[in-house]
Length: 104
Image 1 (cartoon, one colour):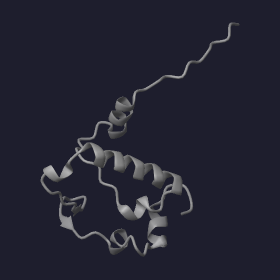
Image 2 (tube, helix red, strand yellow):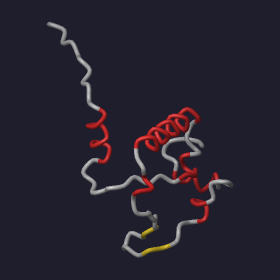
Image 3 (tube, helix red, strand yellow):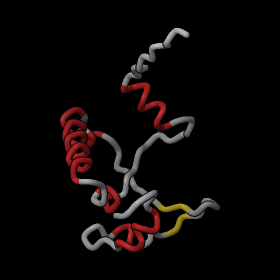
Image 4 (cartoon, helix red, strand yellow):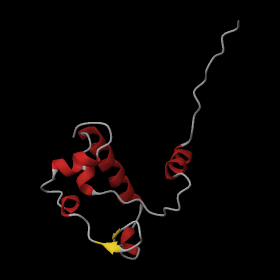
């Protein structure tokens, strides 16, 4: 039987980003700072580089201001839990409760 050679499929960065958003109607990406600071140090460094590149590319001050609101499943506006806002003093137990597959 002849061996089938596998070739890795190259996907463009633009295609990967479209795929990441999937079929959602999301027009924005909002990441809680407290959770970003719980990511590995290498990830945080990469994120800082990307954000620096973002700032060097776009004058976001020319855009209208934005506001992030917490919304319940029933569409009502509510307050964010304190543990999600307090990035200076993270509540490790609350963060661990939403961490997928591992320790903080």
